[in-house]
Image 1: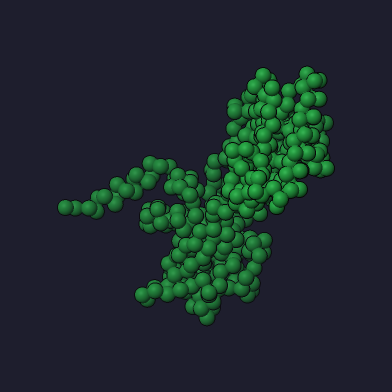
Image 2 (image 1 turned 30 degrees about the vertical axis):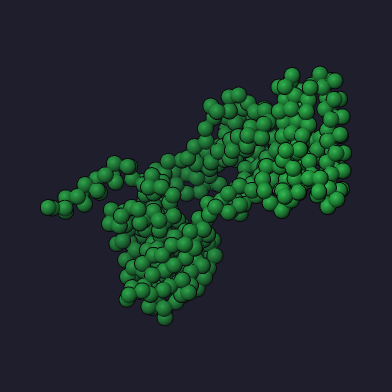
Length: 418
């Protein structure tokens, strides 16, 4: 015999009320939000109803819960009479129907994808520990949604969540690589997003393909890491630029290579970020991506640039302009020798030999900082400045193997003599 009970799962002034449907004879155990909330102090956990003394304050709520439960029981009886078994998806649709807000069929993969972006992502924890993922992350999910929508259109399909199996994901991978001409790294990252959506559906009790665990996303190994050596930076520093705009871009490039920050943080710096302590100058900022507040000592090249600019940072510019200008800066400085790397050719990343200045982009600052000072500054400090979560991530970023770290430690230990 089926049972229908309301419950709450948290404490607070406005917590969600759930309904749980169980039917041991059919293996049914379902739970979904009712769409109603209550002060947890007004709820009786033992009786699964509004407390007797609080009914007057919650009279309409009590009536709504009773009407909803009656509606769900009636719909459940219809369902079982037809020989079908209830699922969480069915319960969710039934609740929506009662509330007068019929939901899109979230058994369809794209509908569930949209539901995930709108309803689940806002409650997920970000790197700083607060709720809601960063805008950039949400934007990437929306991009993957658009790509999957194009995939369905091209293949003439309208896939349900359970249809997105290993075979379909393999087809989607081929679509991204061949039709959309995306790089291996971007394709592998997009597959990770698809798998995240499917796992979220499974965690909600939805049916997913049994072979989904055999599918993995992947990262593209960084084969060609472009950096500016200290000698190259010195050459840039002492090369006069033909315009004020290029001069300011040059200054930002020198500063960036000696601070190790993402361009989203770098180009927002002002003299307000600088402080002095015991005769030393430091820069303090809160990183946009991680939410971490860090302090970095200002090296001589940075102090030199600031001194030439009356103690101020160069004029602010957007990242698109900056990316364009630093290629010209490196060209003027004579960094035009051919190096192996990848650049976008006909909308696809293509590996080949190109003049080095053409391969320079904003990420060269952070990567150059990490690469040039690896082995000179303890890795634990470097990864804090560059905001890598683990030493493994940092080593991969600078193209080092874990054994390289051991070699550096061995060199340091040779200096110990007692």
